[in-house]
Image: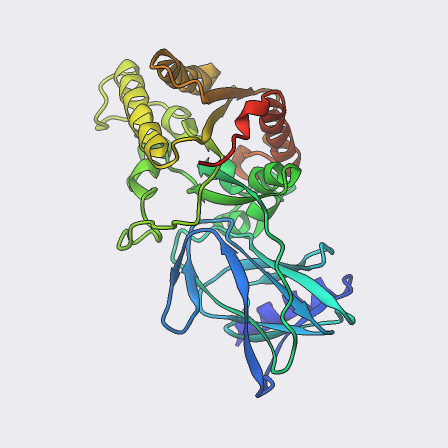
Length: 366
């Protein structure tokens, strides 16, 4: 019961300063019906119309009429942020499964959005969809014409980015991670673009953080969930821009005894070759996308140097729709010396600055 009370208290506290309120319903109205909604992010659709998701940054949007709307949540630890009509979000910390009511909306048509803020490496979480009272009128959804995909590690996830301190426990990292305030949403907002975040903290191109075990990001990338049972297949996802930020985990720590690379030079060669192959796979699926690699100046510039070499290989092969952005001067004041919200904005500014200087980035879709 303590877990349940934690969720309810989080909802009450979050809703006090917002026009809308969110509450778990003990007795949902009997006349609720499914409300059409859009999902952005990789999901595995279930027979009961619910969806399983595990990659970070998934979001759900709908349009509802009337002074209240409803949504259903299934199992899985998650932090959600619900906003109505672009208002201040209400945070839901580990909400229990059930049907929730969004009240205080007022008359008229309202746009509702639920963002997944937390990372879910431990297992998928379930969203059951939005609901409305029988007899309510459906409303058209906002359609965005641009799409951006973000691929990366903890920096792209937004690992501990809302933390006011660097020293964090695992629970504190989880509680202060907010992908919905990270670089993806900040970048996409400038262009009114939909976005996917396909990133996993601690993973690299060929080497995970400090040589830890587990699949690398390229090995996980092709699957809907982390169990690697269902390959990704989303015929409606066609990003014009793909932003990739990888390499920090490959190079930020020294090689350990027993790792397969005998020297730093071997690691660099493997990194470059594997990164090229990964980007070639992205290119084959997204023929006309503009691919942007970005890196910080950490590890004495090794991450940036190796990433820029990968871009050079594409230019030498004649693919000029691949670029590189170096991000300097970050403070890394969030959990375990990760980028803060201010750093996330600085990274987004560097990426949007690169895009804004190149009108050819936004090409007509073929």
